[in-house]
Image (tube, rainbow, N blue to C red):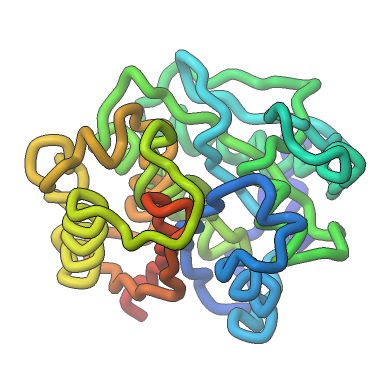
Length: 282
């Protein structure tokens, strides 16, 4: 792992790496069945990930919409177990396993960076593995499961600006070979989902288009306040859990970062799989 051992016996990820600065990404992970359903267009995109994003990360920090806590929490484990945080899905879903190495050193580094930047209470979970917001996309992106993975929780009682600032605190990780990956959904209103075949409704299209334009134009402050500035913000995200991972990835890339739409498709009529890459100026 490109680690330095300091005099006080405290390991740190080395910020002087041979590689360049890592981009950050936001992945709309959609339905858990993307792991097995060949008809989902986003699955095909994620399976080509290593052909498109050729730089292999030293470790991956995942901010998933499926881990909510009162205060920021990292999982500190040596091996990630697969969490089946869904129900009533095909039996084959419960037989899948994705057990990448944990990243306890990265977890400690995340905690350190957050506390240095005003997040005074950061917790460690020493038993939690990876939820499906992490393992479903990762098993398509990195099927070998040989890259260490750490997860960081979201706080749904806070706002977009809070999560953007959380991301800003983590920005040094990009220089240390860490892929910061938000995993959620560009639209996430489960009550409106229907079997495929129908076009997306106006509210979903309007929000999805507004988000794309705001990101590509660098209007990150508007995205931080999406609930008041976006059309149908509350309709697209009745709960912010699947949207806040975007704010973390956005904040970690920096206010001058350029956003790029790397994939777009729809499923279940209202579920947007729009995914974005954020590149900071060189």
